[in-house]
Image: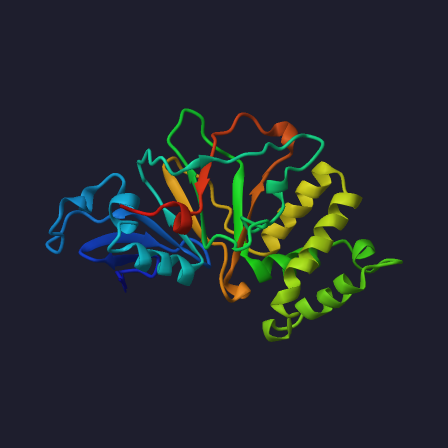
Amino acid sequence: MTVASSATDAHSILTLGNIQYHTTRPHHFGIVIHGPAPANAQASTGDAGSSDYLHDHLLSPPYKDAFLTLVETEGLVVCKNVLTQDSTYRKVRGKSSGGKLSQAEYYHHDGCSCPTKPQVVEIRLPHQDVGRDVATAIAPFGDVVRAMLAALPEPLKSGPGGDRLIVDAAAAFALTPDQWPDVALWDKIQGRITRMVRRELDAEASRAWFRSVDDISQAYVLPWEMGESRLMQNNHADLAKTMQHRRSMQKPKSETGQNGSLVKRWTAEEYPGK
């Protein structure tokens, strides 16, 4: 697998096997695959024009490991214009209410209760009649925790009876990354902050606060397009290279209408290939 730059920095060609793909980098992390380039001399099979290039080529047995390595390296790989009915996807559960945040609205890793978290989480917007304007925010784990600390109102961060772990973590995350707290503490720090926000802020104040966390962490919150899959590194031996995600309401719940439904799977574990 190679990634070769084309005429501009924004557009590149990714070559996997004998197929070339148009890619862009619209965000400061991750890569977007827009689909196979027009059939070229290197393509000796008929899958260059596949409408399901994700399954027919990228996740096919000869290339799956290389593609998952790309996800690991980039943190996020977005595949646009994929038309598929693959049976391994399952519906995303859980709804957000006006008075209470869904668990999915908090930054999280998938599989928190599993002995081993899944390697890759894929979230997909299938083609359907209703579009989606509720975002999926994605950001590196450390950036999320740092942003949560930075966004925390001062009275909550260091007021009377303040949490010493949060106070110390806020000071450390304000320094350079090599001085951040040990990654083994990040889950604990994040859990403490989330519980504090749930306790002290109402639902819409919490949603507004999380939107500020999205901004500070420079999360990927670009709008969904029909037929788009987002594959993110959910578990890495180095937690600093792990991504977190959340359902991000870009406006108050009362102003959110009907939205298209997402599906998901743990691609490395739940899509065995053929």
